[in-house]
Length: 343
Image 1: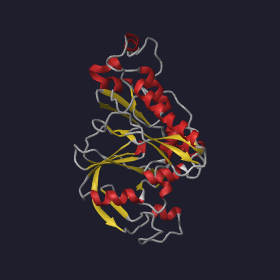
Image 2 (image 1 turned 90 degrees about the horizontal axis):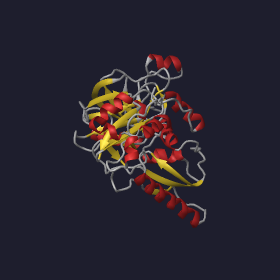
Image 3 (image 1 turned 135 degrees about the vertical axis):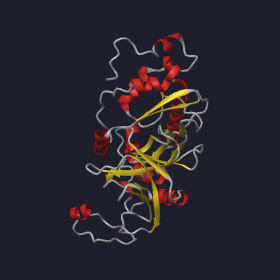
Image 4 (image 1 turned 90 degrees about the vertical axis):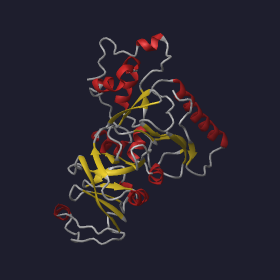
């Protein structure tokens, strides 16, 4: 287990609350670091590399800025923030609240080449080279009835200041739309667009950034203006793109296995309304986890696995017990007799 704790604590801005309260919250962040270093399932994340990237960060709210402001500023998804901070009002989080930011990820389980879009986590990963750490961006995806095609494709062309040609179905839903929308503040494609091999599907910016990190598009992949501007400059035409939809990811780092589980579609819809979701029985992924663990399957912490498959926080959680764990912990690493947590 890494001895370095992946916690960075910042404040959202000026606060009028007494310094003592602030120090207590910062001490709480340090306490979270100590807890992370001691407990399976809340372990300190390793240095970036292997199958993990980034590191968890925390912030102390100031009572003035919303978490939606923070999401836009830091290229994060507001629903992803709610998943790891259930019950916190994203519009009025209140002052001096310690909030976890989902800024660490298990990498998608696919060849690290070009762009990987994982709809289930509202994220896009760009690998400049297979060995490079990815550049991670939040995306907005299709709402009910407007899915994005899955599978391999590529960037077939790029366009700055794109013109939007609404499809017939879009204009049927919105008869007020013209047949052509030129570049400008009314253009929903924003300032940059990457056209995919899937006809009519794009990766593009937006003139409504609060829709990023949510299910609001007609199937296209939206990005924050700053994110798509950066991606546009970095990605050449011909770059391979893989679109997947995997809410559960597994990955190794520093000799430990991690899981990252995201809410399902219904739960994300609940987060939109109540900032929390109804928990469900865990899915049957035990064979997949055992296969990923391989020779280290005897170290799997099934209590931690079951908890995370239910809680679906959307952050990496260590699911192997340390090699030097005591005999009692090792005995709990096997699936217990009568275990019904995995259906």
